[in-house]
Figure 1 (cartoon, rainbow, N blue to C red):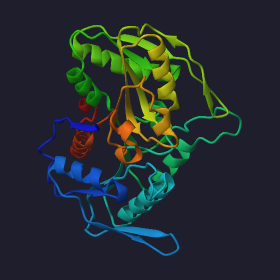
Figure 2: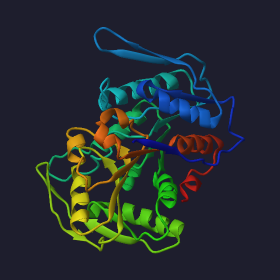
Figure 3: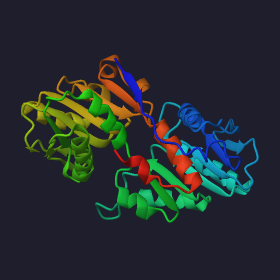
Figure 4: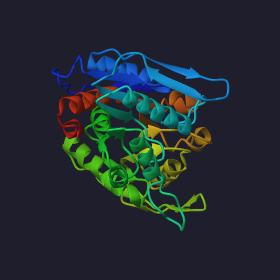
Length: 344
C-alpha cells in the first residue's frame, strides 16, 4: 500500500505572515502550494488563469504585488493536462506579469525543474537546453530560482546568471531510513551509474552518521547509446545486505530496474530505490514490477500515485517535501541561509 510521510523543518517566525511577501501556486501545483502555504502559516495569494479557445492562455495576480517579495510555485513535470513545455510557458508568462505589476523580487520555486538533464554537449551540435531555459527565466525578469535535486548541480548553478538555490531530498531520506532500517541490518548504498557516485556517497555518509555504523558503497555499470542502456557489472559488495539505490529521478525505470536486478543477482537481501523525482513515464509500470525491487521511496515534487498501477503503488512511499520548501522560502525572504536546512 502506498504510504506518505512528512518531516518538520525549522521555520523563521520573523518571516511568517510578513506583509511584504506574496505566495502563488499555479495550476497543477495548487495542492503542493497549499501545503507549503500551510507550513508557512500564510494563505496562497489569489490569481486567475484563463484558457482560450485557440489554446492560448493568460494568468494574472488578483492582489497587489507592488513592492513585494513574490514566490511562485510550479513544478514543471508533464501530466495528462499539460506538458512540461506548457507549464514552463505559463510560469514564464506569470513571472512577466508579476514584474510588470511592480513586484520587487520574483522567485520561481520549481520543485521539479524541466530540462535540467540536458546540460551539456555529448555529440556534435547537441543543444544545451538547460542554459536556454535559464535565459528564458532571466528574460521575463526572474530574480531567483529554487529547485530540488537537479541532475547536475554545477550545470544548474552555471546556467543561471540570477540567484539559484538548490534543495536536496537527502534529509528526507535520511530521516525515513533511520526509522525504517533495523539496528542489526547491514546496509549498502548503490549508485546506478558512475555519474551518480558523488550523489550516492553524500547520502551514504549522512546515513552512516545517522545510523552510527558503517554503510557500504557500490555502483553499477551503465552505457547509453542511441537511447539503449546496457551494462550489467556491479562494483561493490551487496550480498546479504539491504541495498538502497539512490538517484535523482525515475523516468521509465530502466536504470533502476537494471541496478535492482544486478543487486538481486549478487545476493542483496532487500532492494530499495530512493529517488527524488518519481516521473514514472512510458512503460515504468511494467519495467519496475519485478519482485527484485521491493520498495520505492520518492518525494512529492511530482504526484506519482496517479501514474502507477496498483502493483507498483504497493511498493511506493512518498515523502513530503513541502515543509522543506516552506522553510526555504522563509529563509530566502528573511535573508537567511537555505543551506542550514540541508543538514541531515
